[in-house]
Length: 144
Image (cartoon, rainbow, N blue to C red; front, side, top):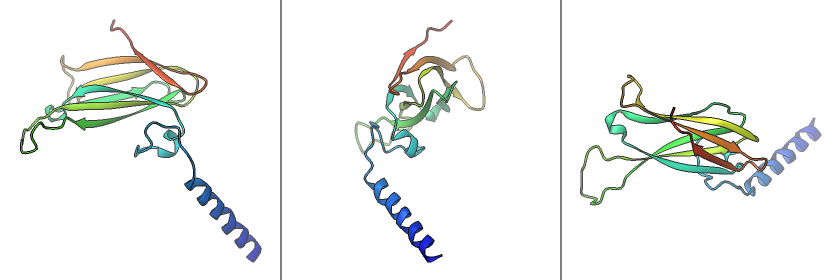
């Protein structure tokens, strides 16, 4: 029993120490969601203008998550004057695409209020292509 415990401790120690020295290929390794997966993938990001104080938010969904996944983060525009107490300052939504497997899929992005559907809602579709090296590219699809 003692041998098994000692071997177990050695294995755990090796895993911990080798994990601390791991280098990542990601251009952004500080992502809060899915760091273990995302840090191993090549990704691409783009920005969408938005202002959540109006109630509108960007949401994005990938059709086939075996090919790519996405994350979205709101970044408020910096105020020109730090003493400025402006309400309703807009910003950008940073959308990042992560390659999972080779192929193509569609990224559906919608700028809308979650509680209602209006004519002001904006929908944008992107064709997402992931190559065999998990490099991600995208192009905006033309509206019908």
